[in-house]
Amino acid sequence: MKNSYKMLVVLAALLSAPVMSYAQSADNQQPVTRAQVKHELAELEAAGYNPNDWINYPQNVQAAEAKVAAQHQARALAEQATAPQGS
Image 1 (tube, rainbow, N blue to C red):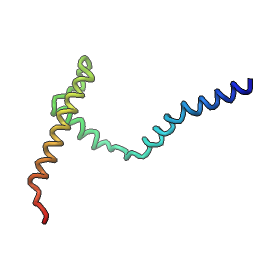
Image 2 (image 1 turned 135 degrees about the horizontal axis):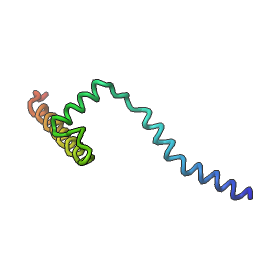
Image 3 (image 1 turned 90 degrees about the horizontal axis):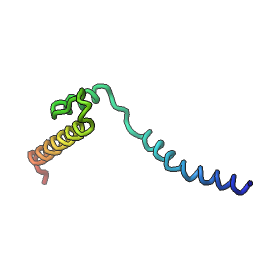
Image 4 (image 1 turned 90 degrees about the vertical axis):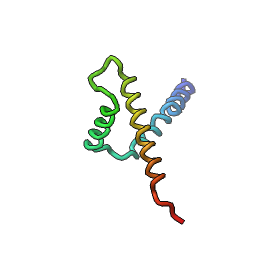
């Protein structure tokens, strides 16, 4: 009986380790401000996301996120191309 109890404790510890490590890594993220959330929502809506369209969720938000990411990448590439080159 004691042997099965020990095995149960070891198994529980092994299964809970990934959950605990995830919780610790999530704490290291910076908090998001209300202004940042509003800005992100405005970008998504400008890219075609409609928060009231629950029938096509999550495809509609994923498509808008892809468009916003492409816009951010294009903007970053344009800034790199126009930045003065150091010698």
